[in-house]
Amino acid sequence: MGANQELTGQSQTETLPEFLVRSRSQQKLGDVGRTDLVALLAFLVVQVGASATQLVVVQEGISGGPRVVLGTNPKTSQRYLQLGGQGMPAYPTIDVTCDGNRRAIPLIGSQAVGNRTVATYVVPQDIAEGMLKAVKCRLFFPGQKITLARQELWAAWASPSMGTQAPKVLPETVTPPPVAQADRPSSGGRPGVAPESAWTCPTTQPIKGNFTTYSSERCIYHVPGGQFYDKTKPERCYAAEEEARQDGCRRSKR
Image (cartoon, rainbow, N blue to C red):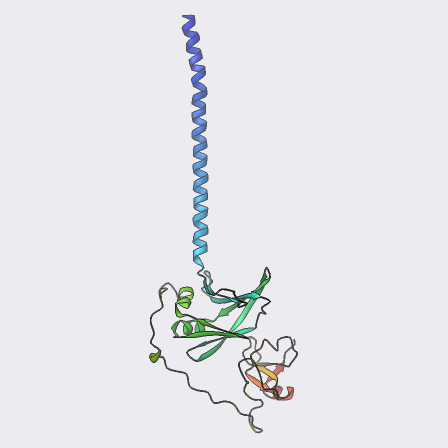
């Protein structure tokens, strides 16, 4: 009898640790399950956040050319365009031409990423909508002319109601813009002459007048050697500063 009691006591002593081991194992498994669940939820949140901003790379930065990226801010729905390149300046504005209509897109900021400069340009709503409807768009800045495909524009900028597939538009259905008459110098007319090209003035009228400004001022003019002279697209060119002032412009502070 005493032996049986002794055996029973040993059995209880042996089974108790096994029970504790099972309980602790279950607790650990539960902890692992909760950890996995938290990790899964975190992963899903990151994926949703990443997919909220649709980025479309128009051109990779190869062969010395800039990297061109289209995107939309998920919070404000503001469309934007980024240019990135080694040693590339941040131009105050860049030009986009769609079906013959030329518009300027302003710079909103730039930052250094490694040895590259990334400049971000905000695309106003009316310009973005015009680009989405256009047959052909091109991006212009010094030394570069980049085609923006309709499918790329739609993939980056189309609203959910519009879908991501660009509808087909026949070129013959697009009405070309009227041809503007070139300004000619006139002693009795407006001071200055038209630019020689998108970025240059005639050598005899080197002062650049720019009317695409973002202040209450009508016009700012830049003289050769100024900080922003080479980065400014002229809209009017003047032979002397007095001509620019007569046309309503003030001199750039830099």
